[in-house]
Image 1 (tube, rainbow, N blue to C red):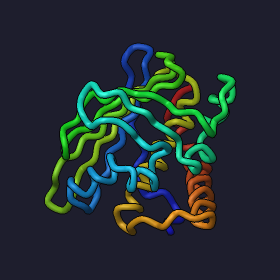
Image 2 (image 1 turned 90 degrees about the vertical axis):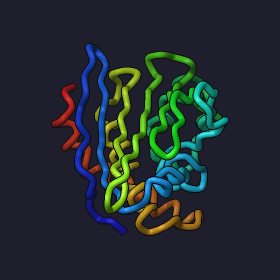
Image 3 (image 1 turned 30 degrees about the horizontal axis):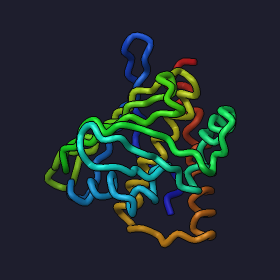
Image 4 (image 1 turned 90 degrees about the horizontal axis):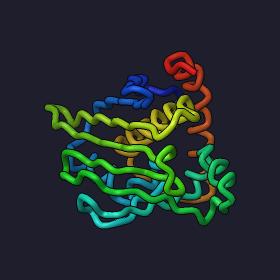
Length: 200
């Protein structure tokens, strides 16, 4: 179990009023293995807050139902409740923009059809002599909770690296509780670092 966050902080991007974040991770695994962890439910369950359901083709509509652990960890549950919806039954929507295995995967992730709550996520994989260089870029739909969003993606990528290095853990009440605690610990460690990086 990792006790401290090992991944480097993300870079803050700006395009007018829009804010983006870019993270680079060097992973000691083939692009094909990383791609499967990024795009298949069996891998997503261990590091991404939602499943990604839909045809794997550019232009396809996507459904993004939250994993139970994803809802427990995300402040997103509060935002969903503010929309008057039960977080346990809420499914986000998106559109697959780029599908180029195992090189590039890009999609939108929206909440309630609102442009100000729709993010763009892009994963780019570059083969290296000893594994894969993963570049993850996200453009945020709005300025709300940018620090928590940055922390959240950093922790997700740490969990992805752990999954690739250590393999999946069978889901159970005990393993879910351990995951939640580990993610909360990492989040507490990272929040002040990203608060300093991202202006209010």
